[in-house]
Image (cartoon, rainbow, N blue to C red; front, side):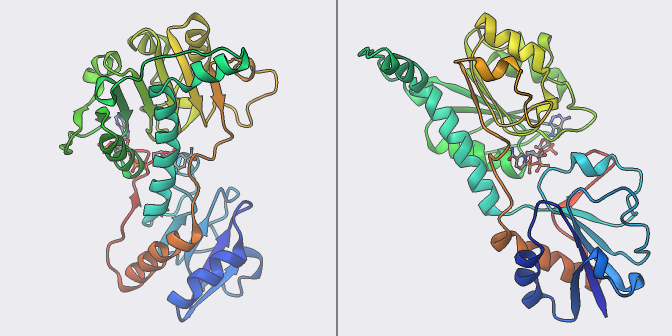
Length: 309
Ligand code: NDP
């Protein structure tokens, strides 16, 4: 017998167990408090479990992170030395791309200017720009970033992408590595941050780096707030160096009520929901990976704690 132990304060145990059970005959799915025999726990499906959570489960074969971001997991000192995977599914990438497309198109079509003019009952004609004249830089070309960059290409934008390792992607000018970052930033009329938070990306977008963006650039962050120096971002938005921002993530969440970003007309704030795991589509990927682990095969969507993502 095998057991899968579930822990999350945010996700529904009932929903996940109902979706997984048909694909995992012979696997008992339960919450930690109802585990009968810890030695039979071979799989863990968790989101931010308390410290020491994994210790009783000495025969774990696979740890599944109940989310795409793993920054809260990889730095822990209580991780078992087993394969770790994260959620990744096409619906999640589509939802993320939809959010970014909305934000990019909003700037590309000057919608904030029209919103402003409407509040003043002012007919304000701005001739539409061609998407091909607008350079959109996507930082991070992973599961979510690559999908989003391709959607932006389909909309006709001049899309550039930046990643750790070199890439070749149709229609996207790709660059990689820190040495190319300032140039990349200087060619991004709209910058989209889609990097994971790791020791290498924490604080990456410092005041100095942000100063390389073209004056009046638009800034979109959908990955993690701590990748950006938020005080420097706020100052750049106040000075006009960055004209507009769409922010889904912040260095502190919820964003404190007294944060100046709340009161800035040129900032659109959403509460960390650009994309969420959709159990109905992610469950199949999780079940397949559990079956692979059971057969002793390698898993997909693996996380590598030593590189931080
Ligand atoms: P992936 O792990 O698939 O991709 C990460 C990308 O970032 C890769 O292209 C990787 O490069 C690149 N990268 C990592 N470190 C560096 C570095 N030091 N320098 C340059 N490039 C780097 O992540 P996803 O696309 O799935 O997700 C990105 C992030 O989005 C998640 O980590 C999570 O924090 C966030 N997220 C936010 C959500 C929200 O609702 N706001 C929802 C879901 C996720 P390479 O390709 O060379 O490995």
